[in-house]
Length: 81
Image 1 (tube, helix red, strand yellow):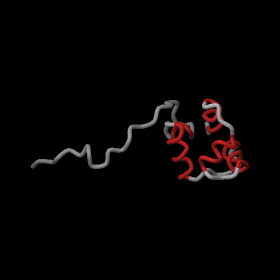
Image 2 (tube, one colour; image 1 turned 120 degrees about the horizontal axis):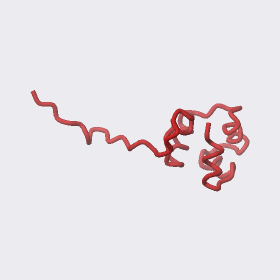
Image 3 (tube, helix red, strand yellow; image 1 turned 90 degrees about the horizontal axis):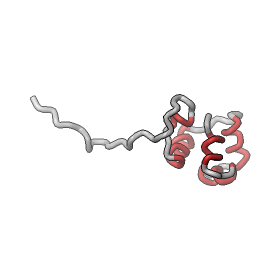
Protein backbone atom coordinates (compact mmCIF):
# COMPACT_ATOMS: atom_id res chain seq x y z
CA UNK A 1 0.00 0.00 0.00
CA UNK A 2 1.01 3.58 -0.53
CA UNK A 3 -0.03 4.92 2.87
CA UNK A 4 3.43 5.99 3.99
CA UNK A 5 4.23 7.70 0.69
CA UNK A 6 0.94 9.61 0.70
CA UNK A 7 1.40 10.69 4.31
CA UNK A 8 4.97 11.86 3.72
CA UNK A 9 3.98 13.66 0.49
CA UNK A 10 1.58 15.71 2.63
CA UNK A 11 4.20 16.34 5.34
CA UNK A 12 2.10 14.58 7.96
CA UNK A 13 3.02 12.34 10.88
CA UNK A 14 1.49 8.99 11.70
CA UNK A 15 -0.25 10.56 14.69
CA UNK A 16 -1.92 13.09 12.36
CA UNK A 17 -3.47 10.38 10.20
CA UNK A 18 -4.33 8.28 13.25
CA UNK A 19 -6.43 11.24 14.44
CA UNK A 20 -8.16 11.47 11.05
CA UNK A 21 -9.11 7.80 11.31
CA UNK A 22 -9.82 7.98 15.04
CA UNK A 23 -7.41 5.12 15.81
CA UNK A 24 -4.32 4.79 17.96
CA UNK A 25 -1.01 5.79 16.39
CA UNK A 26 0.20 2.21 16.86
CA UNK A 27 -2.82 0.93 14.93
CA UNK A 28 -2.14 3.32 12.06
CA UNK A 29 1.53 2.30 12.07
CA UNK A 30 0.35 -1.27 11.58
CA UNK A 31 -1.62 -0.18 8.52
CA UNK A 32 1.49 1.35 6.97
CA UNK A 33 3.63 -1.72 7.66
CA UNK A 34 0.78 -3.99 6.57
CA UNK A 35 0.83 -5.90 9.85
CA UNK A 36 -2.79 -4.83 10.53
CA UNK A 37 -5.78 -4.96 8.20
CA UNK A 38 -7.21 -1.64 7.10
CA UNK A 39 -11.02 -1.63 7.11
CA UNK A 40 -12.92 -0.75 3.97
CA UNK A 41 -14.35 2.31 5.73
CA UNK A 42 -10.87 3.54 6.72
CA UNK A 43 -9.56 2.93 3.21
CA UNK A 44 -12.38 5.04 1.76
CA UNK A 45 -11.82 7.74 4.37
CA UNK A 46 -8.12 7.92 3.46
CA UNK A 47 -8.87 8.07 -0.27
CA UNK A 48 -11.19 11.01 0.35
CA UNK A 49 -8.69 12.67 2.69
CA UNK A 50 -5.87 12.43 0.14
CA UNK A 51 -8.21 13.08 -2.83
CA UNK A 52 -7.15 9.91 -4.57
CA UNK A 53 -8.68 6.53 -5.37
CA UNK A 54 -8.66 3.41 -3.27
CA UNK A 55 -7.07 1.68 -6.27
CA UNK A 56 -4.11 4.06 -6.05
CA UNK A 57 -3.68 3.44 -2.32
CA UNK A 58 -3.82 -0.33 -2.95
CA UNK A 59 -1.31 -0.04 -5.82
CA UNK A 60 -3.78 -1.30 -8.41
CA UNK A 61 -3.16 1.79 -10.55
CA UNK A 62 -0.49 4.45 -10.86
CA UNK A 63 -3.06 7.16 -11.58
CA UNK A 64 -3.10 9.36 -8.50
CA UNK A 65 -6.16 11.49 -9.30
CA UNK A 66 -9.46 10.54 -7.73
CA UNK A 67 -12.29 9.14 -9.76
CA UNK A 68 -15.13 11.54 -10.59
CA UNK A 69 -17.87 11.71 -7.95
CA UNK A 70 -20.83 9.41 -8.45
CA UNK A 71 -23.70 11.49 -9.84
CA UNK A 72 -26.48 9.05 -8.79
CA UNK A 73 -29.57 9.65 -10.89
CA UNK A 74 -28.36 13.03 -12.18
CA UNK A 75 -26.75 11.62 -15.29
CA UNK A 76 -29.32 8.95 -16.13
CA UNK A 77 -30.59 9.32 -19.65
CA UNK A 78 -34.27 8.90 -20.36
CA UNK A 79 -35.08 5.75 -22.24
CA UNK A 80 -37.55 6.22 -25.07
CA UNK A 81 -39.42 3.46 -26.86
